[in-house]
Amino acid sequence: MADSTLIDTLQFGPEDAPTQKYEIYGDDEKTPTYALIYQQRDGSWQKLDETLSFAAKEEQEEATNTLDYGSGDPLPDLRDLVTEAKERCEQHWHNTPRS
Image (cartoon, rainbow, N blue to C red; front, top):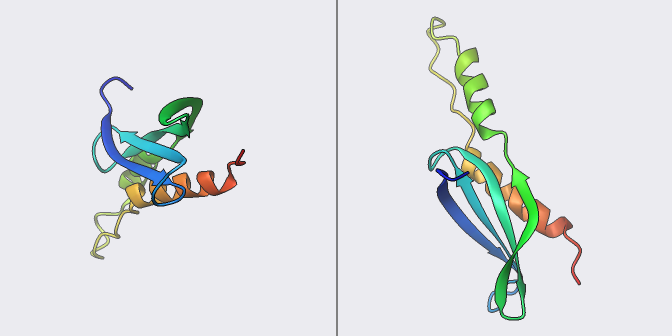
């Protein structure tokens, strides 16, 4: 995790007072691998022990290995892993109990 790249930071909750944020990290800006989760407590962000993991690296390697370069068809678009990671963070936030 030490050499990871910060890809994006998402904040959820009321626009003027977000209650939870996710920092998405990866090996590079297109390959998210995990997100750190923070909650707003007493005016500051507190890191939770929980981390969201994404299988982006394995999925990209698998997609690259299964492409058939001899077919003559144009290469299919790889999935947008960053968007999927953001959606997963939002789903996690919606499923997190509020106190």
